[in-house]
Amino acid sequence: MEKQCVVLVTGAGGDAQGWGNMQVTESVREAIIANGYDCRIVLAENREEMEKGVKSGPCSIVWSCLYFFSDREDIIGIPPDAVWVADVLDELKIPYIGPSAQTMKNLIGKFDTHEILAKANVSVPRHVLCPPATADDIDYFPAFVKPNGESRSVGINENSVVENREALEKQIRFIQEELQQSALVEEYLPGNEYTVMVIGNGSKREILPGRVTVDPKHYGKFPVLRSDLRGVGLTHVSIPEEHQEEAVALANAACDALKCDDHVRIDMREGKDGKLRIMEVNGIPGLKPVKSWSPQIYSLYHPEGDTYTALIGTIVRCALERANG
Ligand SMILES: Nc1ncnc2c1ncn2[C@@H]1O[C@H](COP(=O)(O)OP(=O)(O)OP(=O)(O)O)[C@@H](O)[C@H]1O
Ligand SMILES: [Mg+2]
Image (cartoon, rainbow, N blue to C red; front, top):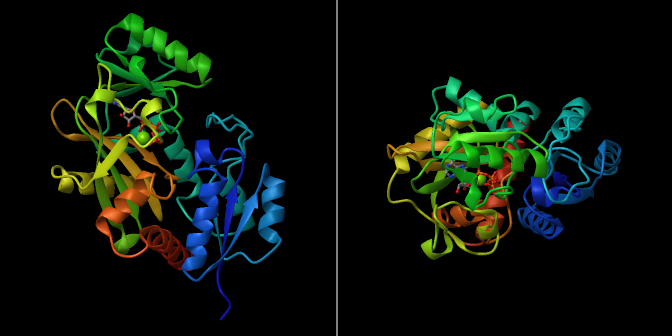
């Protein structure tokens, strides 16, 4: 039987939007090949280039590192006229790894994610989107101000925690002007931080919680994973000693409510009451070997052999099973 071929799609926004840069995409490709599949990389700047690349050879399934086409390498940004990769693939009737087009859109806007989860009674922090709201509409302090649609802690620093209206107004303006998007104002979650990877579907869905820590000497006034603490080897992930069952239940409910497929990673933190709240669901989690949280967590729970190859193989196998019915 001919080998199945996975087509990896990436482009300028690979690092800001997706699992990482071209080097990471090469690692994903090597791991896919080590699992006995064929694999091609398509580098695309727009819909036409992707379509041409995907159609230029064998393709059993696409795995995109991009939510949508963009020439920005620094931020996600989400232009209103964005062409979403999953929309194009749906139109072409080509199966893909990861959540559906609608779920991808729901995940990239954190406000939308929160609204869907809240409706399904899954715990999220209080949240208000500015605009349409303004600082005057917020009556909870301390609050946490972040861009509605970024990743890698872009736009998150010491000033993200605001304790009064003046600081809140200033930080909302910073997000709107510097990152050209709405500011999401959440209730500040003061407790410990968790990140939970979810791989597989249906009865084979596996939920693996991780506890994220940073040496407290790197924190300022608040224990927040600022952008300068990310991607530089300062965060540590371990199997949690507390909140295991709570994290699994929350992640399960969130994946059901949002209809997540194949692989997502869910960030959570303890609120004032000590209970977990979901901060966000990552639709294209980072896949940097060793460095990204999903590969790290996977190797904690599945320490045997080449853990990166095993992780990538599991995601591809589950997705092919789902796509082929
Ligand atoms: N409501 C909150 N209260 C306290 N800290 C928060 C809150 N929201 C976010 N943070 C802090 O900011 C960090 C980044 O936030 P979040 O996970 O929402 O954004 P991100 O940049 O999309 O992350 P990722 O790179 O995982 O996609 C969190 O890991 C956490 O440390
Ligand atoms: Mg996060």
